[in-house]
Length: 526
Image (cartoon, rainbow, N blue to C red):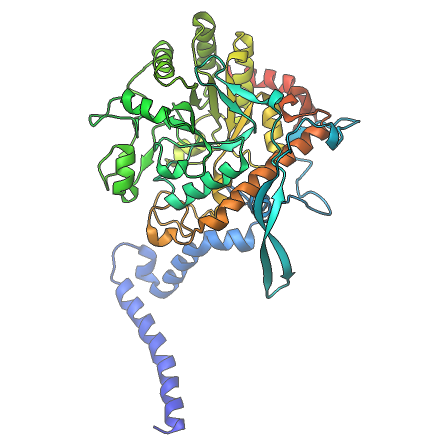
């Protein structure tokens, strides 16, 4: 074939192939019965569906402003990823926050604390790895993964937070930030291992198992464990779905297991958990005591108790069997429930050793839209209502409060502590440290970066040996930022932050103390 003939043949192919493709679309889509727009406009309609499909990605990367994206904006994402990669949260020029909008602020002191005045344990440095930018321009970016030393930013022994001081085995915490419940099954084994390794290196923190039960991957890094039990009793159930106290005792005897949490509700789903059958591998089925490849749904609540007295009996039984502190995870809905809880604690001297309060803005691997959008109170009013109700009934000193719900930066954590929390849980931000790009496919087992999936082919994207250091760096940067914020507020340790250190500005620019804001919440919720 001559050169001219070859060129002519290629031109004909370039014309005929697209024509044949569009003719196929026209003939096929014009006859289908599912999509009305394709019957009338087969080609343009197909373009519409393509644009609709890639719309979320286009908005995320091109059209949304830095502070607009939901549930996390581009700026939120960077506030997690940059500390995780580079172990710094430095910015320049100025904040992108809209200071005319309503929001919470930390009240600074005229004479802040010097670094050497802070009560902090930085005695033993931690070996880590972080990225150093070598070259960064429009067309290339070169980074080097280097060894580094980092301060642990631990609470001193005198400031350590003790959960369940009257238990046989109290839980002593040297850091106020830990990982919220994320189950093995909802996440893959590589993600869980990276979390365990990174948190274990950080020391002074904890890892909540989620209601999927304790797996070998939770234990790999040596981190302290809060064993969560949901209404499905996964991991501590008999074949007929009853509570297996012998199995619970066996798990509680593992040295890393420091506390038990009964999950009554979660912010994004005030109901039991859900796990698609495609995620229930034989290994996960064995850990959860389920049948492989069958979708697992927890009941909406525990069958073992139905009111506060019976719940307290169940808590006491678990505490007696395990010797560990026992807490509950709740979503605040109304003051009357909190008052009933606090009143019964006062009358009986019984109750949980800690209460994890989850805000409605919290995340999940799978839930219904109506529950995620509209059920339960957001974390900030929830913390204040719980904290002050416990004070009202004189039982606040008996129970620690762990808060969770988008508390992923030091200033957000400081506000939560000022409102009454003792400790803070983080989930989705930790997912970002191991590669989550917010694809929002957690419930489908098709996570493109290998985090929220049990598919081995997808999990290979997650390199544990690299991501574990991102987990470590993020947590250490949060701790340092929290101490920095405490110093600016004029206190020597974050454990001293209280309501006097937080102010609220409304959309008219008026400033309120938390006392005034709490009175407003009570009026609105009554």
